[in-house]
Every structure is written in C-alpha cells, then in structure tokens.
Amino acid sequence: MTPPISFTDTHVHLDAFRDDGERAAVIEAARAAGVTRLIAIGGNAVGNEIAVELSQQAHIWAAVGYDRDQTSVDRLPNRLNEWLLDPRVVAVGEIGLDYHYSPETASAQRALFEEMLEIARRHARPVVIHSREADDDTLAILRNHAPLWLGPSECPGVLHCYTGNRAFADKLLELGLMISFSGIITFRNADELRQTAPAIPDDRLLIETDSPFLAPVPHRGKKNQPAYLVAVAETVARLRGVEPAELSAITQRNTDKLFGLKERFEPLHSR
Ligand SMILES: [Zn+2]
Image (tube, rainbow, N blue to C red; front, side, top):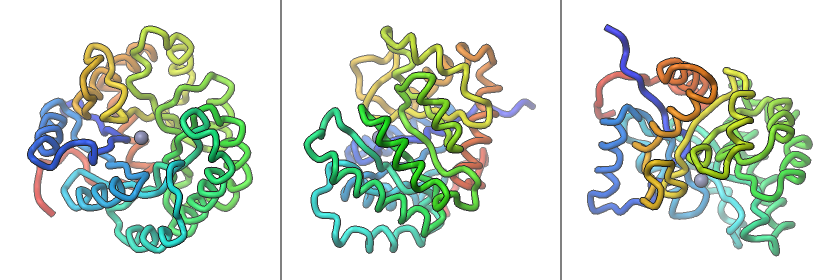
C-alpha cells in the first residue's frame, strides 16, 4: 500500500477561528484533505495562548513569540520562557519586521526581533520569521545573531510567507534558513515568486497557508484554512516539476527536521 499524500501546514493562526466549532471543523477538514499536521503560530498575546493550548492535541505544535505590534514587552519574556519549557512548543514565532503596516515603530521592532532571537537561542528553538518591506534590516539582524542562534537542529529557522526575489532567497539560504511558500504563489501577479520557487534546494523548502489570510486560487475571497494547503502544494510541485507525492516527502522531511517533530501519519489519538 502506498502511503497517503500528506502535508504539514507549517503556519496557521488558529486563534482566527472561533471556538464554537469553527476551529474544530477546520482542523477536521484539514485532516480529511491530507493536511495531517499543523504548526499553530502565535505572535501576540492571544495567539500565543491559543497556540499553546491547541498544541496539547495530537499532530498540532505551537510557536510562540511577539512581533511588530507589541507595545509593552517588559513582562512578556517570562511567559515565553515558561511556555518554551513545553516540548510541544517547537519554535519562536512569528517574529520579525513589518515596515509596510508599522513603519513608525521600526526601531522598536528591531529591538523586539533581537530580543526574540535571543530567547530562541536560549531555548534552542528555531524561529519563524516575518519580513515585509524590511529585507535589508532582517538580513542585518539575522547576520548579527547567526553565530548565536544555530541550535541543535542545525537549521535556525524559516522565512515564512516568502514574497522576496531570488537574491533575498539566496542570502537567507546562506544563513541556513528554510523558505516557506504560501498561497501567494498561486496569485496572478506572482510571476517572480513562481520563478524563485524551483530554485530553492530540496532540503530548504516548506509550505504553509498563513490562514486565515491569503487563500490560494481557487479559493480566493474565502477565509483561508489549512485544508487549502493542497492548492499551494500542487502549485509548488508543478513549478518544481515533481509529483505531489514527492513534494510531500520533501516538505515533511524538512518540517520534521526544522521543528524536531516525531509524530507522522499515525491515526488520530489523544495524548
Ligand atoms: Zn503569520
């Protein structure tokens, strides 16, 4: 029997789904579609809380951190340090810089990013990085921290929802990072991204939905959900000239390596 084609959604904001059954339905729909594992991403107080709570379920793990929109960070690291004692909390994220939405807080964002990288290093966790209109500063900060932040997994992290060009990708690859493609790769105006996707080495490639944002074609206009990762996977596979089954093998291996996951395709069970 050939194993089923399965994928991991490496970036989903599960706090964006209501606790009245919507969230459970979305998780179930993902499993039915072959998206059998989820990395629940935090990035703010509520998102972190919910990601950690959901990571107590089988096949869901959490990332916790604080990104650009945090104003009072003084007491937050204590909470992160506590959460990061839990082996189900597998990464620090999302963290990083966004000069598109919040250019006025650029210097505070840089300080927070550096603080988060330091926490990741201390807890030997990979980082999930956001970078929008801030690529030069993102690279500069990562370069400063690179020697510190190489953890035991050998891979320091991932640049999520990649929208950069080939040159930025090459620099991230030099730093040892993985690169993750979202539904943007299916968008009509994403030709440059479609040219970049085949150039990422097999051992550095990840896929994600970034739900509830950025629903891929043919689901445009709807609230994005992890089940739609299949459309991202099919597009990336086609661009790289491989079957979806091979893309599954490649990305599952990378996901395991980056986040140190052990659970694979076994049936749903409670921990
Ligand atoms: Zn995100």
